[in-house]
Image 1 (cartoon, rainbow over the protein chains, first blue to last red):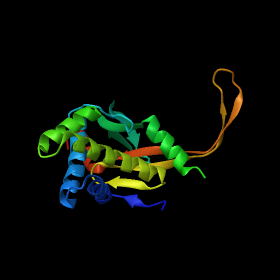
Image 2 (image 1 turned 180 degrees about the vertical axis):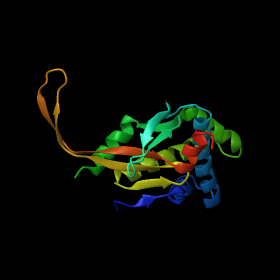
Image 3 (image 1 turned 45 degrees about the vertical axis):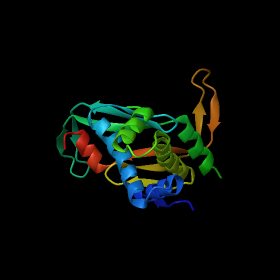
Image 4 (image 1 turned 30 degrees about the vertical axis):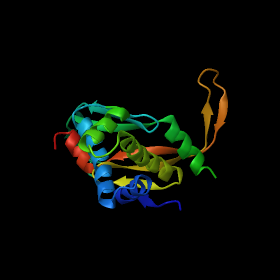
Length: 100
Length: 93
């Protein structure tokens, strides 16, 4: 079963099986969860989901970059980037699950 | 925002659901993502981001306190890449 890609549809299917709501409503709830996390991040809040992980925002300052193909210097504007720090639960499960 | 606040927001939008059902829904989503990665699978959530597993090769590490060499086994670690839509929204797009 390895090397597959799960999507929103698979998450909705799990909610459908687990909770017994309609498929449509399950899909809306999955979307709602992702939307609330995104909105909090866009407001500048970090999002901490216990036993899953933490989404943190980092502000990057402006710097001079280079087009690696042409060598041309290009200014890189200040940006906000998202970093995800997995919880120990996630790290342990991913580590032991992929061990052969 | 923490997990319980996320549950509260979803519950407020879905007054027909019991709080414990909302907790189960939220737990199911996060557990499913972890289970997929534990299985070596990717989870791709368009516009939000994707979760995948990266292999870290075995290497010779060093105990920073004693300077002693130690063999570090290969391992698999979770990785998240922010989706384009969310990345743009974070930067006022």
